Length: 310
Image 1 (cartoon, helix red, strand yellow):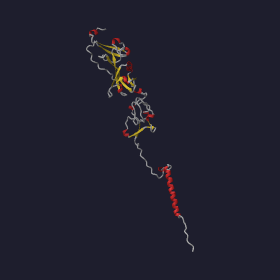
Image 2 (cartoon, rainbow, N blue to C red):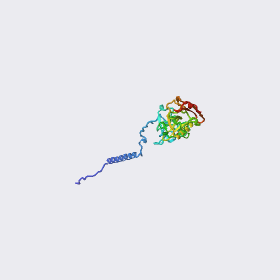
Image 3 (cartoon, rainbow, N blue to C red):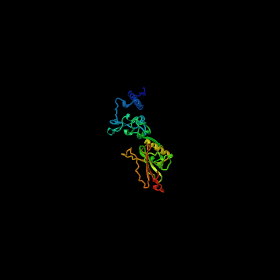
Image 4 (spheres, one colour):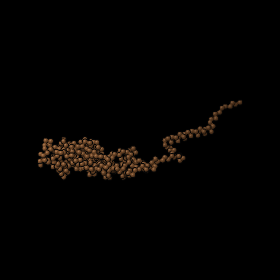
């Protein structure tokens, strides 16, 4: 009798098919995952993908031009000033239509080439009040009002000037020694002076000095170690002479409140006349205007002797 031996039949065809399918699925999933990870396949662009459309946050809002960076006073606006340095694109801010102000400038042609009156920080809108008139030159000269001239001075030589800011208005007074020589540019007695200084002069004080008004309603144009002030052209001569002569100069600030007229002239109140005044003489000069001198006798001199003088 022949013995029955064992026979290795292997995997059945059905099992083999399942194994092959499993390998194909695992390999396909891995391949597709790799393609998605590397960006070859974009799931959002597949025909059956569901696309989520985000709402534009600026929808319904109005774009307004704003400063893209810090802009200093007296600068002429260029496209660089309106560009955001982070994006190199024009800087704009979107506003709700109800918040738009009528004075805001929204056209580039209204802003480019204009000279600023004040410093501007990034993100700030522009208005016509921010600019000098069209055609104004850039630089500190933009701050000099028409009809005036700029004088560069050392603020330490004019007491009180260092306390003022750009745009502030002021007057300048000088303390003048009455007995000074003409070489120093100071006032002499009227009988020796054929070129009186410009402006009103107060009476001689006990210390032998007078107070003279050099500048009325000047404007601070620039501050710093060297300040620039705008003054009347005729006043610039008197101010320069006084600075060169080393006179004691004092700056008095004008009111910054509305209603104080720029054209107001500083007129010192007429001081009470001393009882021992003998003669008051007024001299007119075409260049410097009119000066009034109060002649007061010395303590040891009788008024009658003064009156007899020619």
